Structures are given as structure tokens and as C-alpha cells.
Length: 552
Image (cartoon, rainbow, N blue to C red; front, side, top):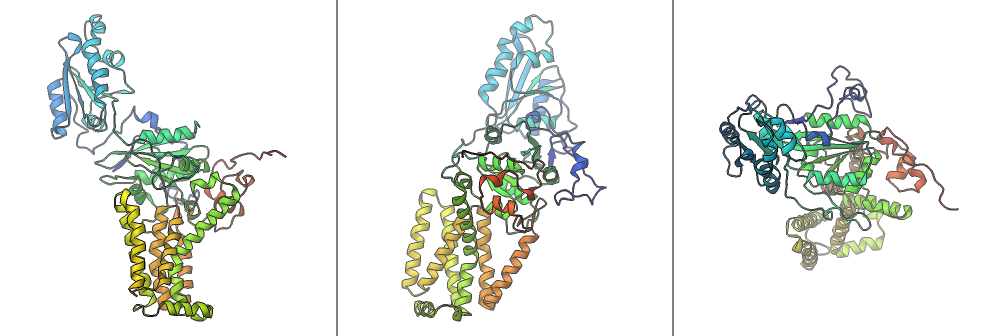
């Protein structure tokens, strides 16, 4: 179950025909006026009305401190890691207690900024008052990022299990939720899957606040909006939507919020897993959202008018909408000359085509259309296959399966030995297979070049899609030859043209054809072509920069 901290919109059920950027589930124009977003900074001061369904919503605190502590610990099954500490306030005969989880809360902060002030430093304040006031405790005795009053058990349980500390005072049927989060997480380090030669060496971590800070450092704009949601009936993870209010297509922002609010799951443990729940077509082999661990790529996406999604515990961000040309871009494209970057982008398109079609093209030419090849090349292929007991298709399947096993092994093994296994294993197995006469040397070259082509694809999920597509094209080449390849390519293009990512066609700007957008996505034209944002993203603010003359 996912509930926003504060509902950002209401469904528009009566206007199903309205459309914005190809999205017809919500009407942005009618939603924006009544929309009251809950930003990340405000989220610490409010909690959702019902967190764990109706189980604890009607259970309230009493004035008895012992009874309150027993109720809270009992609701959490008296787990050993739930810590309570009782104390006497300022030497008076009034007792208080704190409840927290040491592995989630900063225990030093709890003792030095909550317990110690209430036990010792509050004596001067209490000596001037006849009775202890709850407001006095809240306003003058405790110093924390936020302090909220709470009397409902579900709100108290959620806060404690999120790393906050609950303070209960004898004689009051309510308590204080105090900010004491102290998560232990990985420090900001170099991205693992998206290395860059000249770009930033910072990558996202599993700590949500750190990731928000990395983005804030790169976009210092008051129009940068963060909206917070809760994911999962049991996990209650925070999900944050980020976008530039005056740049992004509000239809995409509302559609993203709508898909998140409709989720009803026990829990989601990763950002990429969240993408599978909100994607337009869960059965598509192509990724319909961009997963990145680079803050600079997210910042660039937001400035283009797209929407980013962060999740607590996830070391990546989702950026939507995503099209195939966007997924083939690299972070280093923006740090090189436009000529070099354009050639590199075209090289990636070539690598993707090689990864999909090269083995099947070899099978079709060698098995069905040898007359299309030069005579010397046909003789070379025939001589290399002399003594090989398997047909070309089976050769390709054996070597392709071996390649996939090596790639999977290099990923699952420890990093110290993973690369050595993939390189040495490929050389040894390939050489041994050729010497044993099981496969021909040309097939080893074909599979090797195919592997290199797949490595050029910058997006990992898109690279997996190209590897999956090899098999059906190899079968078509075996059965129908060149005609089968042409037929399969036509079906593939039609399938890709039908895909959408949050209302945006997956092959845009390839179709419909827009020369200006092609210069910004397929190629990287000179700076003059970057004056405006891509038109296919339907941004609210079209202009990106003014034309300036540099030098003479």
C-alpha cells in the first residue's frame, strides 16, 4: 500500500477524454489549481493519517507512563532491539521515558540532547514553575530538527521504526516525536555501473537525504520541487518525486504521482524494482525508464524537463520519460567536442545493431545466401568450417551461451576475480573449442565482436534487451534466411514504435522526424542547436539558453 504524506491530487474521473502529452489518466489542467504538494522539507512535520491500516489508528495513549511503554513495546512484539530509558525530570517526582531503536537512531543524540537536558539542565526552568508544562518541555528543554506531538499508536510506531525517538511523560495522554535519525550507510563514492572519464565521480548512495543533497548542490533553483510518498504496507519506504515546476510537463508529474499512489504492495526494496511497478508496459523487454546512479545525469534530465524518482534504500534514481535515443547517451557526451560526441553516439547505435543482428546475419548469409558473398570469403568460411560437426546455428548457440555464462559469472563473482574469469575464461574456452574442432574460428570472431557491440550500450537494461533479441533473429535466419531477418526487423520496429514511456513514444525523436531534436539526441550538434529543450518532451519552458556570440 502506498499513501502520500499529503494527497497531491484527486482523480479526475469525469474527464476521461482530456489529454496532456499523450496522457489521459489524469487532467493536469484541472488538478494543478487544487493541488497542495507536500515537499520533502515539510514531510518531517506531518505524518499520514492512517499508516498501518486500521490496526493501531484507534489506540490512544493514556496518562499512565508504564502502561504507555507496555503498549508500545507490545505492539512491536517486545523485540530485544527496542530500547527504553526511564528518568526523573529535573529532580521532580515526575517521570518520563524515551523509546528508540539504537540501530536506527543516533543514541548519543538521544542521551545528550534529550535525556540529559530533561534530567539535569531543566532544573533551572522547572524551579521557576509550580507545575511541569508539556509545552515547556517541548519548546525550551529539547533541541532537535523537528519535534511533533503524537497520541496515536500507529504514528508513534512508524516514527520509532523510522529512527525517531518517542518521549512520554507521566500524566500526559500524548508524547513527543523527536528527530534522531542516525542511519549508518555507504559514503558517496564513484559510480559502479556508469564510469566517466571527465565527468563527476560522485554516485548516489542508499541514504535518501544524501541523494537529495547531491541533487540540490547541482540545481540551486527554488523551482526544484520534491514530493514525498510512502511505499508498502510493511516497509513504509519514502519515495520522492523531483522535478522543476516551471520546466517539466505537469502532465508527466501528475501521471507519475498517480501511478505511485495506486500501488498496493507489501514492500519494494529497490529503485529499479519500483520502476517495474510503474512502467507503462511491464512485459516490454526494453526499459521504459532510465535507471542511473549519477547525480549529474539526473540534474541534466530535470533541466531537460523530465521527472526523477528517488527511493529510500535505493542507490539509483529513475528518470522518466525515457526513450531509446536518451538511453544510448553517455555522461561523457557533454564533456567532449560536438564532432567527437556525435561520432561516439553513432558508434553506440552501430554496436547495438551488431549485438542484435551479427550472428543471425552470418547464419543467413552462410546458410541461405552464400552467393551474396565474395568467392574468396565463401572459400575461407568453408575451409574454416571443415571438420566442424555442428551447423552454423548450433555453433552460434553454443558460443553465445558460453559468452552469457562468462558474463553472468563475472558479475556474480567477487570483483577481484570476476574480470580475470571473464577474460581468461573466454580466451581459454574459445581457443580450446577451436582446437578441438567443435566450432570454427570465424564463429569465435563473430561472437567476440557481438559481445563487444553489447558492451558499447550505455544502459545496462537496454544491453540485456539486445542480448535477448539475438535468439529470435537467429531462429528467423535459420528458417527464412534474409527474408526472415527483414521480417523480424519490421516487427521489431513496429513493436518499438508502439511502446510509450509516460505518454512519450519510445522511438522519439526518430519518429515523428524532427531535425532539431535529432541534433540534440541522436547527434550532439553545435551549441546553437541547444538553445531550446527537446520538443518531444513537451516542456513548459521551451528555451534553455540564449544565443551568444563567442569571440570573433
